Each structure stands twice: as C-alpha cells, then as structure tokens.
Amino acid sequence: MEKDKILYEQIKDALENIAQDRGCAFSAQADVWNKIQSDKAHGHKEYGKHFTSYLELCQRSNEQLIKIISIVAKISEKASENDEILPDDFDECLDMIQEEKNKQEDGE
Image 1 (cartoon, one colour):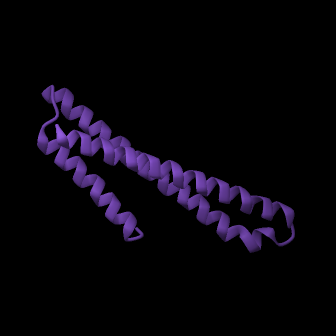
Image 2 (cartoon, rainbow, N blue to C red):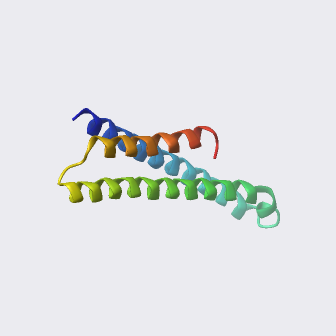
C-alpha cells in the first residue's frame, strides 16, 4: 500500500530531524555551559538566556517524540481493532503529521 510507505517515510524523516536538532542543541548547550563555567562572575548573566533557549529546543523535540509515539500507538490500536489499517487511518495520521509540520514552520 502506498500510504503506509508515505507514513513510514514521514515518521522516519521526523525522527531523523528530531535527532539532528537534539544533537545540535546538546552541542551548543555544552559550549554555552563551558562559557558559563569559565566566567563564574558573569557567565550566568551573559549566557543564561542562550542556555535556556537550548533547553527549550530539547523540550520541543521531546514533545515531538511524544506526538510521534501517539501517532504510532493510534495506528497500532486501530490495526489491532480491525486486524488491518484502513486507508482513513493513514489519512488521519498523515494529516496529524502535516499539522505538526505546519506548526513548526509557523514557529509554534
């Protein structure tokens, strides 16, 4: 079925993007942490906001992971109810993924 391949690719892409974002955020966060530690007197004041923004980025990626898990759980639940995944189930899941993409692009 073509829709299952599309859904698989959408989820795979989302997971890869999340992993990449988290890697960049953790790296940048470590750099900022080192700057904070090297300037104990002013480091928190100078770099604290940057550190916080990287923590927020990690939090958003955690939320994205939870949403993907809920989509996969929904697919699994529907599949076990029907012994198959119906085309409408794929459409609904693809719509959920597209909504999340749109939110990300809009900066929400």
